[in-house]
Length: 288
Ligand code: SIN
Image 1 (cartoon, helix red, strand yellow):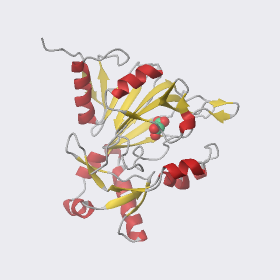
Image 2 (cartoon, protein in one colour):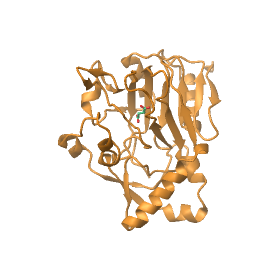
Image 3 (cartoon, helix red, strand yellow):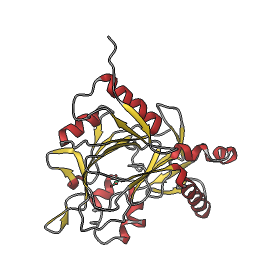
Image 4 (cartoon, protein in one colour):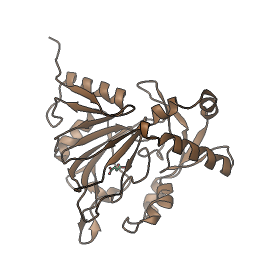
């Protein structure tokens, strides 16, 4: 007998994102349910599930359906009960943040600075501020599609240098409450080269793969050529019609495909209100 699934998919914007209903990811997902979710993931790049307050082990079990997990370079923010869960949090204990504070408050694709960048990431919202703290997602596949053919031809075959420390130089150095990156952690993340345009291994769709957070320069161009081209691509990719903005409620679970999207956490909330999320990271392959 063929397995039936009650999973429903509702698009959330013109370019990216869909809400999934009819399933609780904390239980054992049937193959039919997971196949429907996986298809929607490839079709929409960002999936939102409501009312899913997951224990760390449940969160990890769901995430592993997509592939093996990886742990973040900042080991001090691993969940004490399960190191595959990473804390994104402004909650403090004895004056010190218990998780990565101000994480991702700039457009980026997770871990694009790794030789094998994170394939997908998931966030489960446990506590959210009363106002603000939304996360925006932008489709880099839609952004690529809208470039002219001569621009696509020029970008084809170009590589860019990605570097985790770029985010510290351009963003974290301007905020007071993010602890500095230790020399030991810096040594774990040397700069790496990535194609400027990557091909999605499952859908075959091409996507821009440079981002303001981690991309330092385009290989082979002069500094001013590289800056001008990156600034153009970054402005192009941030146009509102490529974006879905997620307003979090406690229990929301969102998974996004880093091969096809950027995201940005909006820093517009009262830092005295708790924003406490659990994240998992699903390992990826080298970009091509
Ligand atoms: C991240 O970049 O993973 C953090 C996103 C968020 O806190 O909304």
